[in-house]
Length: 322
Picture 1 (cartoon, rainbow, N blue to C red):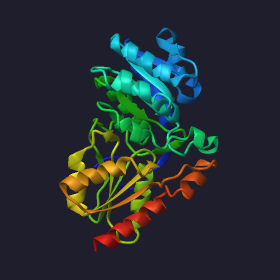
Picture 2: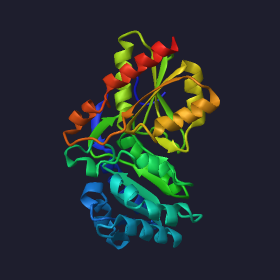
Picture 3: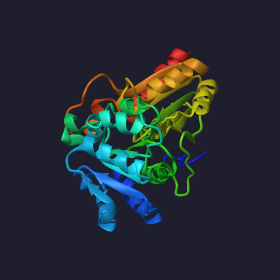
């Protein structure tokens, strides 16, 4: 058991803020850590690193593709580079360079951080929203892909990403999010964490949808439905044993994510379930569309990324389960 079973979720920092602070901690510990920026340092929060370690900070201008290639070059020279931008820019604009300079060559120890992921960036609109970043990142051979849900897990995964040898994509968000984990929680790349026990249905999520899944479990609990909640922070490699356990123990799975349903975590969980232990599944995510501009709350409501939507998906799964 981890985090909370009492559903006492208090608002904490944005995961992008936690990333920026953890990066400074990392820089103090390891002189090989360097940062590349695409003229968004105050948004991605790497400006704190730049202030403390200006000699290890490379400003690449508004040129994510070049930034990725520079980062890969620094990695080839033995450094541990973190390249940071909005997810939509570093993945979409930098994809060819990610493929050719980081994924294809062996042993490129590049860390790619995408902030402002999903639609919860709000009023900035669809050109700034990254809803296909996980599909792109997981398509890159050799990449590890991580989507933490709160400030505690993000801090831990920044350090774990630096310790891990090989290319990593780390997903962060813009808005403040509830604190799910207690300080001192242990994390491991490739391992899911059970947050709430349950026997009827398993709610699997990553990012800000983890807190929504916990709230959905509370809604369902009031209806006499026992929902298990599992945080799946590592999108690649998946925790296959956790997925097998969910399928066998509850026989119904709902995967929720702030990402296109096509190509996201849900697809990968379904592949694993199909191979290991087929069961009823439902998916909560963005359905084949780009979002509009609006407040984060308005957008999450309009595109069905709320606890109520997760609870409804769980009811559908249980109805099909019989």
